[in-house]
Length: 179
Ligand code: IMP
Ligand code: MG
Image 1 (cartoon, rainbow, N blue to C red):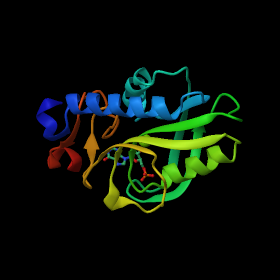
Image 2 (cartoon, rainbow, N blue to C red; image 1 turned 120 degrees about the vertical axis):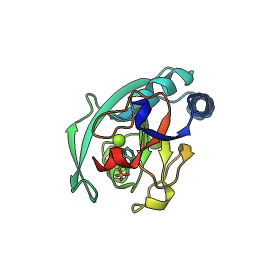
Image 3 (cartoon, rainbow, N blue to C red; image 1 turned 180 degrees about the vertical axis):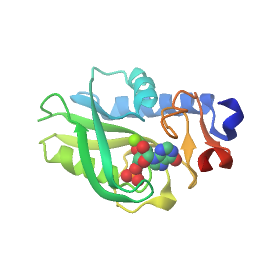
């Protein structure tokens, strides 16, 4: 995998520091609340597991799998739920944990969906966001890093399902993406 990397955008240390910071803020904001992390698989797995350890509150977790209708490059904004929540979320303070917000269409759909299920509150925590690509006007309450419009992998993010286990966020060489 090392030979495929063009540039590291966010190092392991930078990730660690930022996640600690996010955890501290979330711990303060959710004190006394019934916090439930909802991870959107599979991109969230590394981020969620590190973030959860920095939130010093009792919390529960659940996971969803969603898939966007449309072509690989053009999201339609209509999202299909492949794996739904296991339990009722009525009265819960939901924090959606995402790897990256790109167009925002997926997240926009998820927030509306979770609100319609009578959660007490629905907020969003995303590790990365690409401001240049936004289509849907979706509110992000906690953002790790704002990144340029480049396709990134690592720390949960994949290209063709590979590279999720890289401990940093990076850009691959152009020849990898064109293969
Ligand atoms: P959107 O915000 O609805 O456009 O879609 C966001 C989803 O697209 C993310 O959850 C990722 O799965 C995927 N995605 C967007 N940008 C990237 C990237 O740079 N690398 C890897 N996956 C990405
Ligand atoms: Mg994702």
